[in-house]
Image (tube, rainbow, N blue to C red; front, top):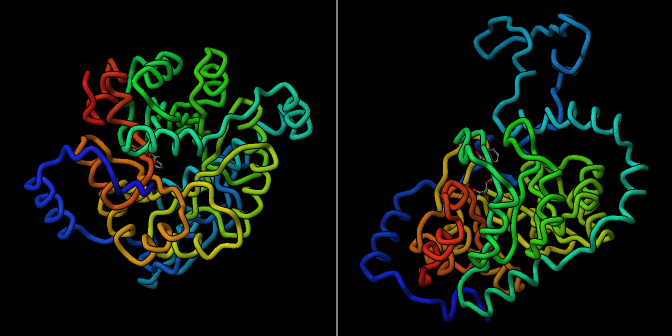
Length: 355
Ligand SMILES: O=C(O)c1ccccc1NCC(=O)[C@H](O)[C@H](O)COP(=O)(O)O
């Protein structure tokens, strides 16, 4: 059944009209570069060699002179990350070098024999959609973020995960990035070992196949792949690896160009997420999802039966209904649930269910 049919209609007509008016005045999603050709917008590494913190040799630093558009001579301008997503991705190189030193790929792969079996992440969502006639919920275990700082100071990943399951989440998303989100791969293992049965998404900024093996080793059932960071060639390769390990992939897009590129790709799509947050500027608008879903690419995903996920900035039943009306089959929700003391009650309220 389509996500757009048969849902609990809790929003009034007046609210819906107001939503449509709000939507009409919002800007369309655009690529951080300003040109939405769908190409990768995030540079994988500093273009002029490693930046200072990568070298590990005291104060030594590459100095590269460039001519700015003003004609002025500047140093290392091009070696600064252009936004937070690029900063996160550049730091992955440093983090991965350390991790691989301590825990080489060969050992990670050997350790996979002891990994718990995978659960079907996509089926958990589609089953919930069929049973509740509302989008399946992927609830996010997230302590902090670059845009909001610390969201939940009393962060207990297992307690939060259990409350999410109790409240009716279909699946969980677990932030594993340490530096920018105060997460960790070990949270995946802690949640699984505590007996939580919801399938787990490893919410990581994946740039290297090594991270996919690590996700599985710690008990993930699915991984996130961000189209702004990964060209189709990498998406195809990483999907192949994830599938070989029994995991599903949530491919995330933010612009028309990225979505078109992914849909034109030569690889299977388990789940396609539209992030309402511009990961470069932090601007959040649900119209990113509704505009894409109400356009030609929305038609295409519906025709192809691809389960769509609306991600970020979801706070109310009206938000859930708005996204469902546009055709999404799942929502990924972090802040609005994780900051509550009783996230199980929060889920029920978010979906307009009796508390
Ligand atoms: O959340 C951020 O500030 C952020 C910054 C840079 C890259 C990614 C970021 N967040 C990842 C996500 O997309 C969200 O954690 C997820 O969609 C949940 O969003 P929300 O419900 O708004 O917490």
